[in-house]
Each structure stands twice: as structure tokens, then as C-alpha cells.
Image 1 (tube, rainbow, N blue to C red):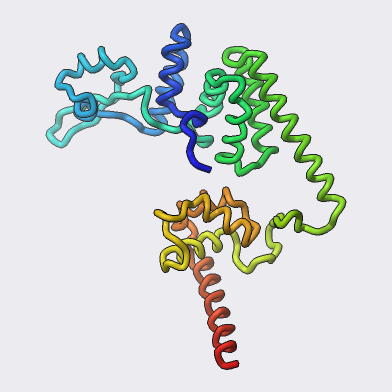
Image 2: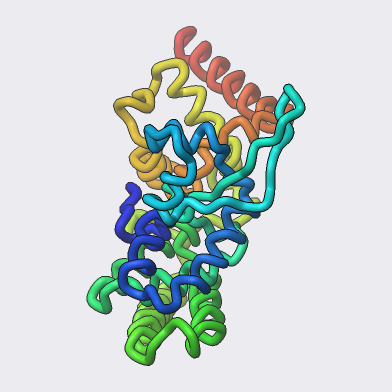
Length: 282
């Protein structure tokens, strides 16, 4: 699924919105941004600030761009001098579930977004960040509401989120009820994979590696012609593995290049070679 910066927890847009619309409470929001940026070590140095601002006067920059703030931290330069560190509260950064105080920014985003777009926002995040895992996602949403309903979330937002959860859970129960009537794992052309089910000879990690090598050897189209999302969709149909997991893992294939996975792919290629040799002799 392609990035939608309107629906992402885009720090740049969120900071601008809070500053313009909720100026009275911006100081509290700002503290959370500072904690996040510091936790990610996303500091700027004076020369970087001046270069990006096309200025030679740091005080003028700080006056004209209030979202850039000076911190008490500094770095020691090679010549023994010290450079002060700065933070850009409106940095182009997408807050992720693994980030510090992620739930806070999720709640801030919920209060910023139009009620009519909340369904689309929730759907976007379950697909992009929760691998369509409704149980995990709905649990997070309920705790997030419980934690922030007093300060950040009004009753209309909470009701809308709860309605979305209820609708999704009802649909899931209906699908599970239908699945229980038929013992087959195959439904509407899709296969529900389970650990060690042996439906395909490669694990999910090994399948990701195979996808990578097929691209490198031009069996499949390369990145400029084939997005990870489309590759994930295709291999979900072919293997039953989740397209979202395949898409996410394809960008970090190197994590799976261990001896065991590579040996399994090598064994597969050996079996293919033997099968082809038999066909040629026949």
C-alpha cells in the first residue's frame, strides 16, 4: 500500500496543525515532539540549520522559524570547539509504532483528522502497520482511547473509532463462522497459512530471499518496474503468505541471508535441476 502522507503520523503536518489550530496547548505537544526527536537522536547542528535556511545568522533563523529550537546538548568538534544541537519540531518524519510515545502521536492525529476520514485513517494503519491483525490493532485502539480520552479525544472521535472496531470485528466473526462450516483451508482462491503447514517448501523468510534473487537475475522485473507491494500481492496468491509481510520483509531481505535459509533455497534449485534433467532425457 503506497504512503499517504495525509493519513500518516507525519510530524511535519501534525506540528503545523497543532501550532495553528491548538496554539493554547501547543507547549504540551511540543514536549512530546522533543522527547521523540531526542530518542531518535534527530539533532541538527548550527551549520546544518544555517545551510537549510540559507542564512548566516542563527538568531534570525530561530526568530523566523520558531519550530527550530536550541537544546542544551552539544558535540565536541575536532578543533576542540563545541557545536550546539538543535531540533526541528516540524521535521519530515513519519512516527512508527515502535517509536517512543507512539500512542500519544496516534491520539493527536485522531483529534486532527476529520470525522469523515477516521474510517480511512484506521483502515490505512491496520494494513500498513499491523499486518491486518485486528485483534492486536483493536486492543491498541481501546487502550489508546482509555489513556487519552480526557485530554485529547472528544466523545465523537471515540464513538467513531469504536464503531469502526465493532464493524470490523463483526465482519471477522462472520468470516470465521463461514470458515468453520467448511473444513477446507482454501476459500475463494486464498490459502490460510499456518506455521509448519508444509503447503510450500519454503518458509516465509526463504520465500522473500527467493523473490530477491529472482529479481537480481531478471526472472522478475526489478524495482523500477515492479513495486514491493505488487510483488507481495503476486506471491501471496502463489504461496499464501501475507502480501504485507512479504512487502515489508523484501526491503530487509539481508536479515534473512543466513546459512540455513540459503541452504534451503540451494536444495530447491538442486531439485529443480534434477527434474529438468529428467525431462530433457525423456
